[in-house]
Length: 194
Image (cartoon, rainbow, N blue to C red; front, side, top):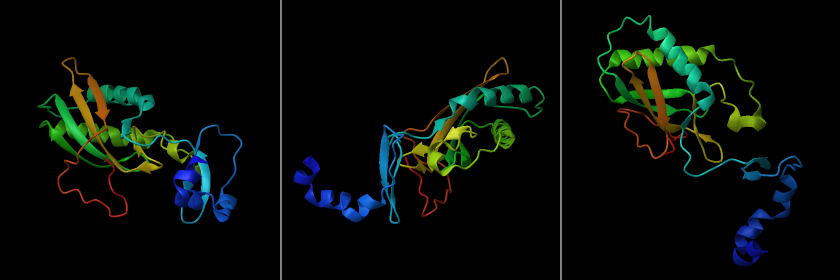
């Protein structure tokens, strides 16, 4: 009623008979969003929107650190720096699309991290692509992209530290990042959200 009185044009757009008949009904969701596209509208699982940036998948973090620690014992590369900050572009499904060192100088440590990351991702079980679970489809990935009505290509800064006892500490932050990757070519139909 408030919408009809205050914003009548918006009310007419949302509550037109044709649109209402196209909405796929649901009885199993208490919290939901109404998604309107050019082809159809549908009720979907509730998604948080706003300032949520890419995040580290906490369910996978410890497994990844364990793999870093285990494989490092056999690593023969000389590491000259014990701390790296790496910026990465996380694609819509959670994989690293591009990455670059933004603090630190140890190329061998960076290469070791990326080699371990690719091995880790390849060893994870393949998830079935169920459309209704699109926001949660990337459970196999170490990183989760920004969610704003749908998953978005986003930025994350990865903090890696080689501790004096030859173990690793890993964390990441995706909120309020600014693109620092040199020569990154943004896809016109898949912009980075930050």
